[in-house]
Length: 324
Image (cartoon, rainbow, N blue to C red):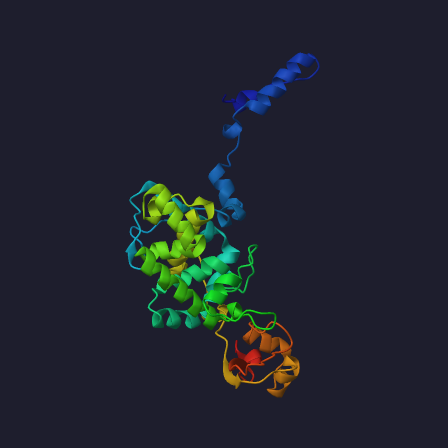
């Protein structure tokens, strides 16, 4: 309904209007299109209220083509395209988390990348670590641990030491090597890196069962449940964003990024009875030693077998001067 503002101004409700008539008039006022009564348009309101423009949300564009570990992602399939779209929109607009991931990547990718290369694992698998742990030493509800979220049984099968004093799942170097062994084994089994990545989340036995049940060997054709069904697309979304962060609205200066940790190595083949005192011997402290060596899980390092451990000692003044 369009209200004539000129005529409306001549309406008088003084004295003689019944209660019923007044209700009718109020209803007309509340339901009328009063846009013509105001010279301020919606566009002008948006211009005046800068919070509207600051909070505008736009469709994030998808790449025309995309690969994972040099294997083509079939974006021509509507379900594949929409699955990637979901993860790309979510991670682009989850500003705080994705911003932190970009910062952490500057610290940890220089450790992960050369190990992947050495072990013959495609570089794209560094984004799997992002999807698994957000590049943090997290513990999942299923008790998967570390940057690569490795279960205790799996970790021990892969040669990691795991006990109350030492847990090498928290060691980014050793856990990355263990993850590479797992991925290489499943690449050999399934014949492609996409399924190797899926098996990292779902388990190789679980993937086998679904291949038999669904009579198909392509990740993009399998129903693998909510978590694994989204898994590769999350990895791909991180790849797309990380390769061109500015395009997706993440503007970071070099000094905004978390710098790689700087340290020198000390070999230890005997027991450490007090890690705090051990740290003081090298002119650092317990907190910094644990920051550099999160795999040390207690205040001692029993070493009955005289195993050789490599302990990172922070460079002198690194803590104070790294951002200078």
